[in-house]
Image (tube, rainbow, N blue to C red; front, side, top):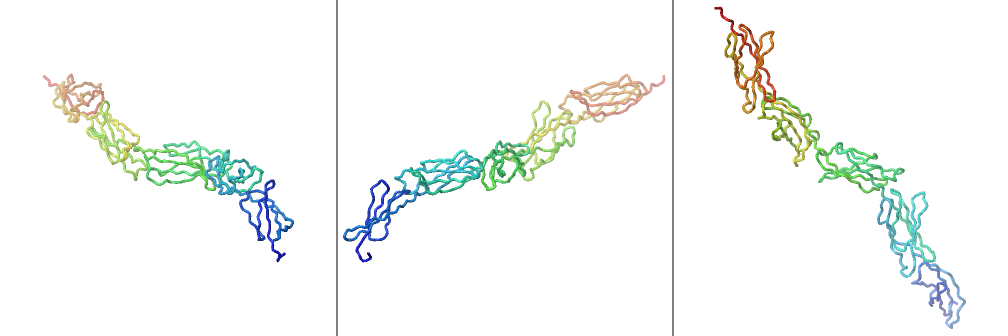
Length: 426
């Protein structure tokens, strides 16, 4: 047959359809525009130049059903995930759908179908790796090859994040569904204008240290799996406390002044601050002053008066600590220069100078005098002198004088002695 002019008659058809025919001089033929995933019957006969035709030989071929392309995990949450893919080429005119199968290790696969090139998988376990396969399915049930991807669902976030503002201690509840899953927690905290600090713990609580006083911190906590997968963040804020002055002490008290001191609050070595001092006596407006030193002398006080004193720490932005307080009572000055001016047989005159600082203060003087073995005689006067009468002649008397305020407060006693004259014989 090599020298006999000939060619080949080829036909192909889908069962139940009219055949497509072609003639070729070659010993091979490529058919195009075939339907994917379809079985074709192909027959070939030899045709001589005189038109004589041999018996045909035939075979069957099945075109490949293309699998979905570019299978992508679009998003993953704690209990759901979205996957999508591109429609396989050549299926624009072919009825088809997709079969999706997904499972986690040790479980039976869940199988579902969709005509869309995307699907959302729900009711998944958090913090779990899933295998997902997708294939193209024709109406006759023929399936393409599987395409595969994996994803890990997001771990659940810590719950009930609480903070103790006094100690900067944070705590949270373990996320559900992680009893059998190795995990830990990542904590991030920062104040405005700074880079965040990160730390981790396997516990459900943490105490943050080295924080700046009187500063707002943003704090976030998330669950982290061993593969590095993180949950959503849970967040809160913490306003650290500005520490108050410590050990407020009254160092000394005088008639019109007092010295108070305190210890610098902890944690303020690198923080600009000062102290605000307020002091007043009952019924008056407070006097307010400031100092950068941990001590101050209060002056121009009223003598014999109780004062309330408060001190607080103040930052440059005006934020104040809680107040620490104490009370002090200025000294009531005693009469000065108690003098025996004259002595007679049954009387004596004594005088003294008005104590300093009492020009604007209502007061009087209490005088007590007695001779040995007797009860004291007590009298008062608003004057700076007094005449003592009905004394026994030739007798030594002890005399004390003190300043007394309207509220009954008394100064220290000043004292002297005098001896009355003896009666002269007639």
